Image (cartoon, rainbow, N blue to C red):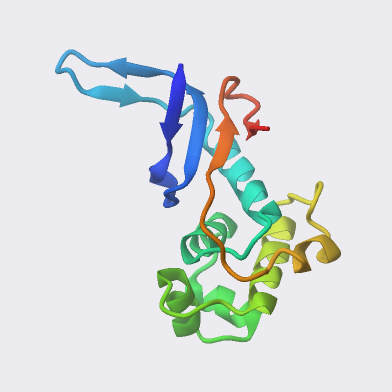
Length: 149
């Protein structure tokens, strides 16, 4: 069991600890991620609780987890789909109010209303962007993924 950089979710900074790696008969490394839906919920919760502004990729992850198109998210935010696309690509910086609202929408839509998902908690997190720090997930028990301490 080792740490695994889980880039298949579209985020470069998600690290899952405790993932089993195997080598097949051709010498290729095989990584199996059990219970991916649960893992994505934990990642979404970590993003909602992130203490700095969302990156474009993180916003795209939350939008996809909510099952929304750029146009649908844009409508909810009273913005054009093109604006949402520009935020996701990092062409334009996201407005702090949009960042906060995306987190609140994700918390409600994904039923992640636990710790750190109240409006007052969320509005303080949409601060100017800082360097992306890893989202470390404890994957030692795939039936119970959680953000590593």
